[in-house]
Amino acid sequence: MKVIFFILLFMLAPLQMTSARLLCPNVPHVSMPVVCSNACGTKFLYDHCIDAMRQGGIDMSPSHTEETTVYAILAANQTLDSYDDTLLALSFQLQHNKSLSYAEGEAYMGCMDDYDEAYNILSAILHSCLNNCYFPKNVSMYLSGVTSLENCRDRMLAPWMKAPLLYPKVERDRNKVLMAYLLGKLLIGL
Ligand SMILES: *[C@@H]1O[C@H](CO)[C@@H](O)[C@H](O)[C@H]1NC(C)=O
Ligand SMILES: *[C@@H]1O[C@H](CO)[C@@H](O)[C@H](O)[C@H]1NC(C)=O
Ligand SMILES: *[C@@H]1O[C@H](CO)[C@@H](O)[C@H](O)[C@H]1NC(C)=O
Image 1 (tube, rainbow, N blue to C red):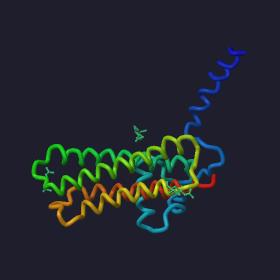
Image 2: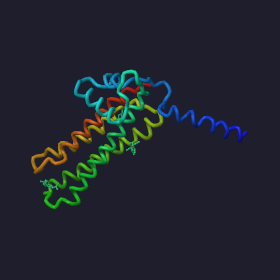
Image 3: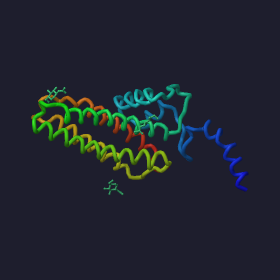
């Protein structure tokens, strides 16, 4: 019995590899332009979506389709990688920039907390939910990540910040998590 089981596993392994991108049952397969237009209500967001997906190596042609989950996973993954980049820049400022004022130091530390929170939430969505074909009905998880980044953005724009050095990164990350949310939202109810 065991032997048969192992032989079966062996035979199934290559099959699974060819369908590596087929992740979850009942999830529609759509092209990149379609998923981006379904997710995004404005041209700004649509263009941003296309750029992000293209950067992630997804074939742009209307005849090429992917399971919707693939797009949501890609957007969450890109967002987390981008958070990592900003966290490095934040810790560089805190550890090496001797000319930070006290208030600036407080702002950067506040942002570290905002990012930790945003990172943990999105990482849980990616690893516990999306990767397991579990689609939470409650999207406020995504939105609380957006709120954390907006808190950090406000800290960066405070009048006591001599230079809004990290503002562009925070704004970029906010747009990325918004994209992850918009694509993730398409999976609700599946
Ligand atoms: C995103 O995906 C890349 C490539 O698959 C991987 O190396 C990286 O660790 C992922 N990032 C996260 C935060 O899961
Ligand atoms: C959704 O989750 C948020 C926090 O993650 C919680 O405050 C809220 O009550 C939840 N809403 C529902 C309908 O479960
Ligand atoms: C250090 O902080 C000051 C004050 O915000 C800023 O003007 C300067 O560009 C920072 N230096 C570096 C290397 O980031």
